[in-house]
Amino acid sequence: MKKLTFYPGCSLHSTATEYDESTRAVFEALGYSLEELDDWSCCGASSAHATDHYLSIALPVRNLVLAEKEGVDEVATACAACYNTLRKADHAVRTGDPAAVKANDSLVDVMGQKYAGGVKVVSTLELLSRPETLAAIKQKASKPLRGLKVAPYYGCLLTRPAEAVAFEDPEQPTSLDRVLAAAGAEVVRWSWKTECCGASLALSRPEILKEMARRIIVAAREAGADVIATACPMCHANLDGRQSEIADLKDHPVPVYFLTELLGLAFGLKKAPAWVGKHLTESRSAVRAFIPAGKVG
Amino acid sequence: MSVALVPSQTFLHEVQSHSGQPISLCYQCKKCSAGCPVGFAMDLLPHEVIRLIQLGARDRVFAANNLWVCTGCKTCQARCPNQIDAGQVMDSLREMALRAGTAALAPKGRDVNVKTFHESFLSTLRLFGRSYDLGMIGLYLGRSRAIGEHMGLGLNMVKKGKLKYLPERVHRMGEIRKIFAKAREKR
Image 1 (cartoon, rainbow over the protein chains, first blue to last red):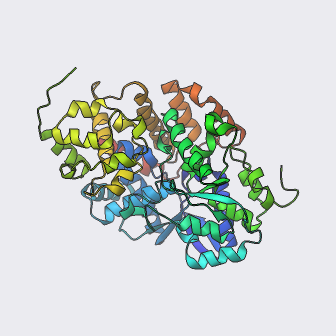
Image 2 (cartoon, rainbow over the protein chains, first blue to last red):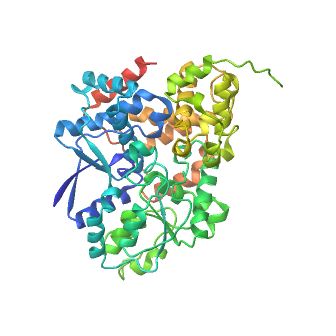
Image 3 (cartoon, chains in turn blue, orange):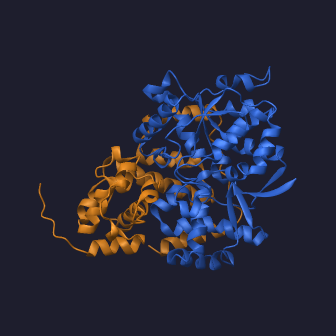
């Protein structure tokens, strides 16, 4: 087992426990053990960068200092929002952005040391899409997702701003496509891969959010997809959570899965049906063919 | 109402230095507006905000809802030929408006909820070091009285076990408190 230091973030411990469990199980099946960064704190998410530049650096960088104190040089995260926030703060400190450098200096007083710039934050999607991992996924997929038409949805946080976060082409990413294809799924081509779902407006402006979500989900359906796959708990909450309130979708919903749930189904993991059972949009029937008999319900 | 616009560079310099963005380089190609996923809900399109900043039209910039409904998705940033991050400009305008604390710069109507949401989120973060959804939602709904539009979603989330009753707390809370204290000092 290869050890991987893991930053779960708040969503994976609360609204998206199915993403947390499926990520751990899939990585374990691929030979990794995920160990949580000790005493991690929230990255600040949209609310910090939307209202307070100092917090948008200091909150995520606290976690990078924790990693350096543990002697860890790589931290993996499955949440696209945490990934984005941690990477942006790391990039700002490393490239000498004056406000970020000052915020980092202030951490000496908070934690006894500041961030030295020695931690690589990686997305679990990036790890899954490495060629050797793709080969392992193919090998592990005892129940390949044959015939399942999936729209790969990246959202904004995994690709932008490119200089700080993108590990591939920011306008035409393909990592999720490749992972899904390795699991045997039929990946559809569509133009809405990196369109924003409106996550940060989820509570404050639901009417705007619903229109943004509607456009993405309808586009996936028009492209021929049966289901959508994502690697972001914010995107998942928004695309999955409100379909019953959207006129175009309530009678013909499109289930939305975390990438690792689909991998779990392909690997034949016993807990996979329970994970997809936690979605607010009914998500079992679309993948019934991949659920072992007696496991539905 | 028509207001004569007297071009001034003061506001431009203020926003440029706060955001670190080279706003004066914009030549109005409108790629930011073409790609903006929230454009349909904005009072002005992103390129218009940038132009008004160049012209020093401070009041018109703060009167528009753009800074409150921008989601920070950075599509504009990715496509700008002059490396202007319009999303960062919106973050800066929002921070300027919040710091000013005046009625003139405060969000109006439905945009108030954006401010209320961020405050509620950061309140739970300050208390626990991690976000606590149930607490945050309670604070937000109490302050915004927007319970009607979230009732269905909330009940479904409870039914599916998506809302944890108890918060998780960071052990070294002193560090979190110090970070928030420093943020307050900087205002």
